[in-house]
Image (tube, rainbow, N blue to C red; front, side, top):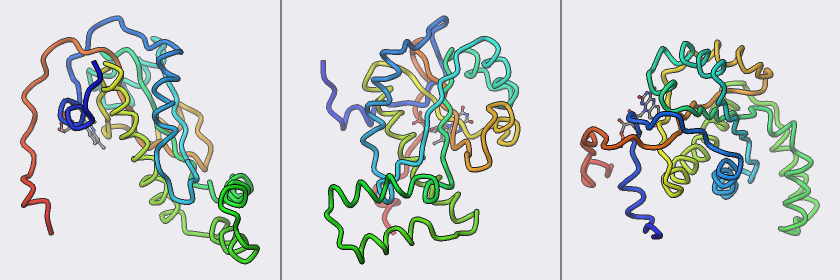
Length: 202
Ligand SMILES: Cc1cc2nc3c(=O)[nH]c(=O)nc-3n(C[C@H](O)[C@H](O)[C@H](O)COP(=O)(O)O)c2cc1C
């Protein structure tokens, strides 16, 4: 049965009750990434990568890095969303080629886009841009998991430097989020209350 998007948004939970012994296979992994491909991003830069960790050794290591959170072990699969803070330098040619091919940019506009992409920025600004973009990709991933009948929990309780070291991330790569991924093991606790529509409006 195909779920309405509205229902999917309501049924998605940050799952803490995972069924044991479930490993995501390659076919499902690629299905999940197929959803992620359609995430919007500034310049259409798509400055993210997703790494799947499933081995006992990786799970054991990430359990410590994620402050001993139980779900790291029970989910069976961990996904690290990784952002590239130097996307403007590393990928400016690809990005520019695509804009020129699909948007028929004038030379002046193309030059403007190139200089904007390659502009030197303070690290915090680049981090901010990438965190915004890659967080949207992470959200797409969470909805994709729900749509495919999987269970997921995003995690911020992570020792960033230890994770970076463990994964061997380059200077330009930052770990945006870890997502515990698996199959639901049954009922979750009641959902925490959400703000009312009126409270959301400023
Ligand atoms: C960026 C982010 C970081 C989170 N970090 C953790 C975490 O480290 N551990 C955890 O158990 N849940 C974590 N959560 C899950 C939240 O607690 C959860 O989304 C919130 O309580 C609402 O519950 P729901 O997603 O089931 O509706 C995180 C959620 C987000 C979006």
